[in-house]
Image: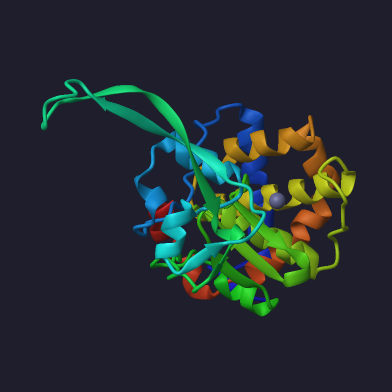
Length: 279
Ligand SMILES: [Zn+2]
């Protein structure tokens, strides 16, 4: 069993678990840390849009939407039958219709039809790379269980996800907590404890979220990242009495956390400060 500073993985798992529960009990919780999603950095037309228009676009499940002509210029065609989504563009008129260099006046907004990348076909687009320069710790754990990790811009209403049938993790943020959460799902699946759920309302789904999020909070505490409050709020969303749910699922959480710590490269246990700074 891998040992860091003479302490076994199981002991570290227990310490981290106790720490998170103690912070919860104490009620002395730090403020919730805002999560930031990855945004497309490339010079796509939408990178110049207003925030409202970009949010509207993401809500439609895409990170790249363009006008019919703009797609043509990029070597792609809008598929027949595709529905446009509408963004708002300002409408200007000349203040003085006769003057050549008249000032412009804003008279309102009009809907501009744009189409999602998914609704186009043609030349492949140059893809932006969203992978952070320094990957968060515990990458080797994902490799050990055969799970691929990729970074993508925010595509929908999730920060990250583990896709069991693909053995893949997709992350839309560089926050370590999200990575830890998805890694916990993957390990939970690897250890055979994750049960498929058809909807978010099912007990199996809720239990899986409690296990993943509490494991993430425990890992955050080991890497000196304040995350206890976020985790409590998250778990309370699924289970009213978060501590009770954690206690009920304790064996499963401990198994996931211990597995992760057992496969943590020794070099990373002494790398706490670097990770905390990146958080
Ligand atoms: Zn989850």
